[in-house]
Image (cartoon, rainbow, N blue to C red; front, side, top):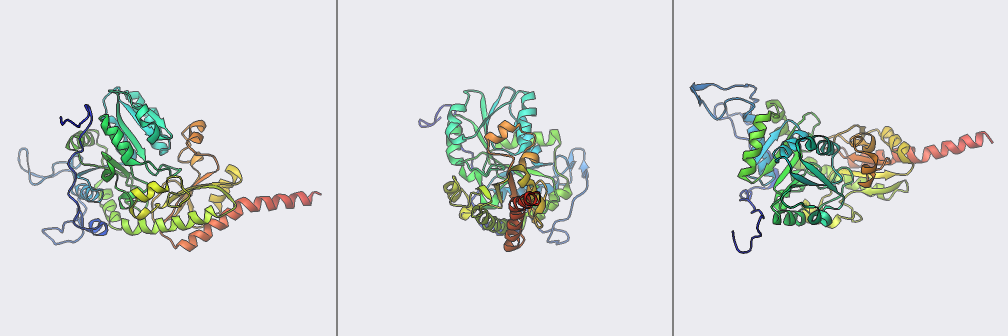
Length: 419
């Protein structure tokens, strides 16, 4: 141990070599070899579940059984590793399966510190499942301020960050938290789903593992259920790949192929979605019908300075949320009055979506905990797609007018009618 190293701290593992090419070039070419036999430019889908062997225990190539490894999954993992500046990546059957596998890698009696404002499925796993196998989770609404005090010596093994958080778009200074965590020998996981590798690379900011729901921006077409984790540590690779194979929560070859195809246009989609979200957030912030707009790309966002440091070109991403005047009824009416934004859960697809988190994605979280994290019944979450931005803006503003103003007008008309 070096004289300057704190006892119990962890060393940063060797990083992946700096990429030679820029993001768009890597997105198209990483993990995409030409077929050596046919010359096919696009990989074929390897649907076989088993692979021939020339002798007992002597596979023809690198594959034996598709749960353990598959050509399409391998190619996708290589592409993700390249885009997240990681040495390794492992794909799973869903984002939730990725979360579960990481938590299952912890020993019984472990303690985790997490941001309060997390995806509802993550909160459900932390509070309903992890606890049953002896892993406790403490939630904090102000992680950067509280993390040192929340660490339990010899028990805390993991810090869980969502930045931006879901659904209030709060940001965390990843490097600041990672510095404190590593001094205590604690790993840092960042859920990067809301931004994608194009806008943010948490491993470059000191995180140990970055996770994604591939279902969202990476695949980008709302037709794949999948997750992925990327990292640099050999030890983490050994632990997670063992569980990936032992538990068997792996994506199909077809889903891996589809997600890899979607990944090739990620930079184009993420840029357009961010531009659209900025346009809509600016319009909502100027409207008299909103109480609050959460979008890290706006200078008014309390963590805008972090966005400028951590995000590519200070982009705010394609997600935003806002509180609407008129309560939960107005929130529901807004979603129902949108014509281009589909009322549906999920996010990150080419199409725009809207939802009310308190009744949909975050309904399983107790009301008191939800509101403490800023998830009120009048909060609307928007996922901006890649449609024409002006069309989306007009749709949002007309839906806002119909949800907030029309009920008041109709109420006055009804009152006058009874006068």
